[in-house]
Structure formats: structure tokens, C-alpha cells
Length: 541
Image (tube, rainbow, N blue to C red):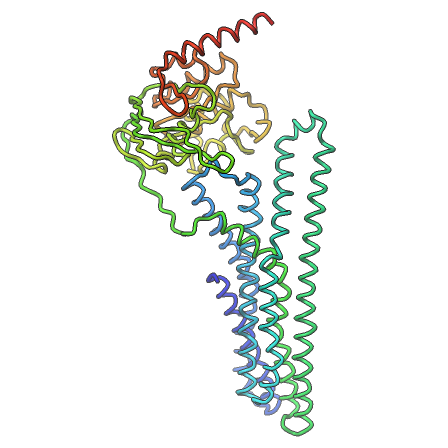
């Protein structure tokens, strides 16, 4: 149980105990009116009011802290060891970082605290009754309170699988909706809006059924706590109080105080019942959250590699890379050895599926690898490579927001002058305040989107760029302009391409076949003939 839950539980127990003291002190004051008894009563009332205020104000604050904690752990784990080949869908990651984090934080702060208090507070009240009124009355109240462990056991048992169905249904709906928004233009072009609407409607109906199931169990919990337990404790205590008053064992103030203490005893249990819905959905969310995190909380970030040159050299020794395919690992790079001189423009060529992108991802520290990668003769880790290298995929990833926000993606706090400097370096003549979007880019061309990625890499201060065919979808002239801009930045440039004309402009060509180095000349000749044939066919058309 996290510290936040223990803190809230302690507040509830302390408030209940002090309220019990207030009831007994008020009974004493009625029995023996004296001004000396007012000051302790007022002090206790003030303390109870402060605890009640903290009990009201703390949960939102503690919940926000837990949300921040879980999101920080998610971010650290994913950036410390990004899994490119993970089977986890983007919608699942989104759901975990948003809804799952929120529900898990609510579970830890708003359910676990009352759950613990429901076990401890009744014991405190029973002890108070035994010490101040009668151990016989305390015994009768404790017999009714024996139901509490059974209720809590039933609640915990119900929680184990109650929210799992809701979590799955919520994830499916979020994934389908996110996919529909991202591919809205294609859906409209293919006239598939009706089909997508039916799918989303079916998923929404499924989540409605799951929510109704949760609400049913929550109402059952409230019925048990308020009906069975509350009625049992109040009835037995009232019987003891009335019989004691009739027999002369208690006076009227004591009898009334006993009934009020019984009402106070059942209050924490009722509060736990009212938060049962939070517990059911939050438990499954917390399990889903933990399943996507490493067992150890400690994530160590290595010191940045001290590379002083602007365009460092790269040496690869016995490099091996395996990728997941159909749930199995397949070796795509095998014992690769190569050198890239400092400041060189190196092209990586080869047929599709031979490991070009896998090599680029490994050099950028985005894929696990075996072997050694050295930068300026200094061995570096994958995490250090991610600090030194900027990787540009075939399609630039843009986010809804301003151009400046997209460039300062890491939130380094770059000022406008630094943003403008990166825009200038990428030959992008746009206002940093220009709004761009995730899907339609709000007016940016493909070449401009690629330049935004270049500006982002420049702002990062990367010394090595890996270009994984970022200009493959651009026309030849625009592609050449973007590539020339990248070469002019004065860094070590590694370009993955299938265009031999582009590869021939580099200073070094590395050819791959089946994950191994081959002579570049044979592939160059074959690829050049294919390009000539393709251009001839296009001309004839």
C-alpha cells in the first residue's frame, strides 16, 4: 500500500476517534455542566474539523502526485528501453498513460485508504466504548463488527476480476476511435464511414454493458454495507442502549452517546462501500499499468558520451540485431563490421527486407543489439546513442501544436532565437508560431515536413543523422534539396535509400544482403538497370 493511502487512512481513523471523544465529552458536559469542560470540547471539535478538511482536500492533491509518479515511470521506462517491435498498440499505450493512470491513482488514494480505515476505525471505536462506557456494550458492538472482515474479503475477491472486462472494452473503443480519427480521410474516400460507425457503436454498447455490470456490483456493495452491516450494528447497539437505560446501567446522555458511537463506527465501512466502483475499475487499471513497467523502479540513465567533434566517426564490431516477427525473434543483422569516417555522407543500400532500417535503428540506439558500436573510438550504449543520434523515419512525425513546440519536442525550453536558428539551418522559412497538425499537417508539404524533422534534429544538437528514406515519397528535386540541406549541417550523415542515383552522391556506400555486407558494385549495377527500366516504362506510358 503506497504512503498516500496510509496517510489518508490515518486521517480517517484519527478523525473518527476524535469525533468519538467529542461525543463522549459532550455527554459528560450534559451530565455535569461546567465551563471547564468547554475548552477541551472546543479543542477536540477544532481538531476534528481540521482533519475533516484535510480528508476532503488531500485526495485530489495526492491523486495528482500519484498520476505524476506513474506517468514519469512510464516515460522513463519507454525512453530508457524503447521497444520498436512491441505488440502493444498505440491505443493501448495511450490508454495506459491516460485513463489507466488516472484510475490507478484514484484507486490508490480514494479506495485503499478508506479500505484500510474500514478495518481499523471500528476497532478504535470499540476500544473507546469499552474504556469509557462498558465492555459489555463494546462486546455487543464487536459482534456486529465481525461482519466487516467478511465484507472486506468479499470486496477484495470481487475486485480481482471485476474491472478487467471494462478495461479491455475501454481499450478496444479507444483504439478503434483513435484509428478512425487518424484515417478519417481514407475512410471517407473509401466510403467506409457506415462500417466504422457500426464498429464503434458495437464497441460502445459493449462498454455500456461493462459499466452497468460495475454499477450493479457497486450498488450491491452499498446495499451490504448500509443494509446488512449498518442495520445489524445499529439494531444491536440500540437494544443494548435501551435495555441499559431501562435497567439503570446508563443514564440518558450515555445511552444517546452509545447510539451515536455506533453510527460513527459504521461510517468508514459505508465510505468504503461508496468508493467500491473506484476500486473495481482502479484495480484492473493498476494491474494493466504495472504489466507495462519493469519490475525494478530504478532506471539508471548513463552519463552522456563526451564526444567533442562536431561530426564523429563510427565503428561497428560484430553487430547483431534480432527483430520480432510473428512472436518469434529473427536475426536480421549478422556479425556486421563496418567503419564510417568522421563527417562522411554514407549511403546504406540493398533490396527490401535485408536489414537496412534495422541497422539504422540500431545505430540510433532504438533497437537492442549485440556487439559494439563506437563513436570517435569510444564505446557507447544504446541510451548514449539516442543522445548523440537523430533518426528521421520515412514519414516525419508531427504533433498538433505550433511549429516551435514540434521542434522543441523534448521540452528543453528553447527560446525563439534558438528555434529560429534551427529553422534556418533546415532552410525552412516559416514563423515558429505557425500551427501544424498530426494528420493533415495544416498546409505543410511533404518537403516542409521533412525539414521540420531536420530542424528538430538540429535543435537536439545531434552529431549524427540517420535518414531512413525520409525523402522517398518526395519528387526528385525536392528530395535533393532536403538531402543537400542535411549534408550542409556539417554532421556525420547516414542515409538509407533505394535510389542508386542518390547513393552515388554519397562518399561511401554500404550494401546489405540477408543482414550481411556485400560488394556494393553488383547491387549498384542491378539497381541502376532497374531504375533505367522503370523510367523507360514511365516515359512510354
